[in-house]
Image 1 (cartoon, rainbow, N blue to C red):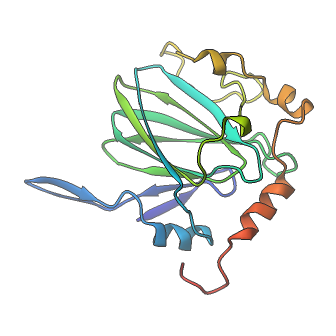
Image 2: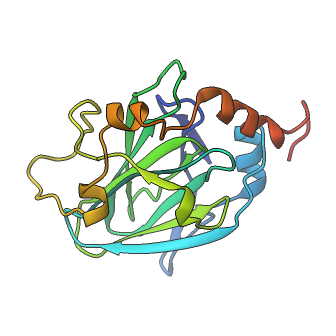
Length: 205
């Protein structure tokens, strides 16, 4: 697999090897052992989610409080989405920075998002599907959101597609409001969280 580091530390885009022949194709869209080598720590799957969205559906920016937080590995088995990560970790050298990747059923890339980093995506086609592998189970008491259209974040959503948001996301605070309300994770707490399961140097995973 090919790996590209995104502008937000800890976030990576993974391009798996796709094997095609007259019957169709085959790929390994997730490999825990190889991902652990890339990250320097294992990614434990506690829950798997699957969403299907009409064109223009905008979900996020979502994150979970740290500890324990929730890391995600997202993959688009059908359609196409613009996947966006946002550094919400107060004190991070890249706080407020975002990056994006197109995930679709052509290149079949995936994105890993560590605890403390916000995640959002927009469906670029009708019936676009996204599968999420999550490191912790859903806990509504620890789930939070930042408004995906916050002008401070200025996320790269296509302007020629009508945005479809949930009531929850439409009511979410902007980045500055979330920071003032002490709703965001800190860089320090996230580093402590990452260190808990970091692999010993030289251990392959």
